[in-house]
Image 1 (cartoon, rainbow, N blue to C red):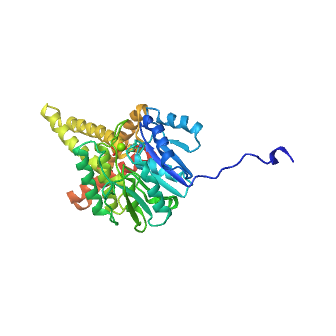
Image 2: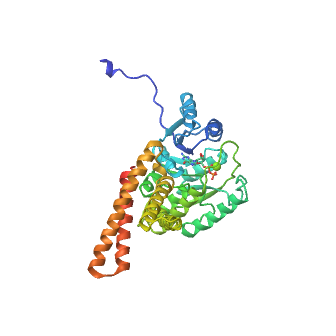
Image 3: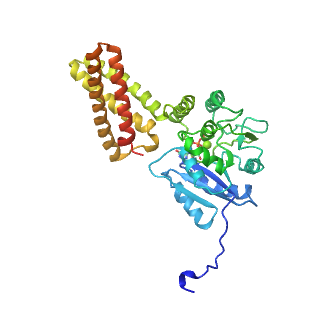
Length: 373
Ligand SMILES: Nc1nc2c(ncn2[C@@H]2O[C@H](COP(=O)(O)OP(=O)(O)O)[C@@H](O)[C@H]2O)c(=O)[nH]1
Ligand SMILES: [Mg+2]
């Protein structure tokens, strides 16, 4: 027998049946307590936990590695230059080879003692997705920080229920389980933006998923901070809009146009101010245009292309590129409008055609050159 034919005497253990996918950002204080809680809740099962961290400045990924060194059940994915709860869950779930994937927050707000019930509902085939619900009997939403968060949550649920193909009391839940193959089959259609991956899954499935709700409590956060902010809420609105448009209009394009409208408003306002302080028309127009481009760039960087956000030098380089791209767009806008006007003298149609061409050009170049994926 040659060396490489030597049969290994090490036992190869089979993979886990359950992957618990945990999106986390700045949750370093919560990682170890969560693993402990899972050990109790999933005792007797073959499981692993996959933390998906977006390179948090509080070194969450390092805490995960420290734990994983001594515990084969712990895995970590560290993404660099990316942000987003939904996309983090997608990457975690797609990296799993387990039968069932369960998704839960990394801040101990979800009651891990309900995990078993969620997983069993999926394994027993009584549903495609088992959802930890705060709004069925036995569940509660005590952990929401204040009345504003309660109102926000209730408003979001009401809105989501208007677009959902299935009946669900808590479509905003971030605590649920489903078969890995079910997740993988839907994954290519997911929009992947924002906070609401369950809603995204339900809205993106080829045929309505059978859901079952399991009562579940929502505890107050003890360590770390909530990442829900105004941008995340806007992304939620955009997700619903995208699903209403049945994917015909890309979500990013809708966001890009919304930012573009803010730019038009800024352009006009700055131009008026410049005129008031005595600038010539051409100068006022130039100042307004530059101000709008800068505002648009930073809004797009933080909102439209949040998952590809540019920082430091890359941000400065991106701004210059963006201004170049928009300048070419503006020239094309004027050129095409003049050409059409020259042919049929319809001012509105000519302006509209020019504007549409400029928006599509700016969007295409922004997506491929300025914020490359
Ligand atoms: N990887 C990743 N995880 C995130 C991101 N935003 C939030 N999370 C995690 O998602 C979970 C829920 O977020 P949280 O801020 O607690 O939302 P809240 O409970 O609605 O206030 C937590 O574990 C967060 O750390 C993100 O951009 N990337
Ligand atoms: Mg939370």
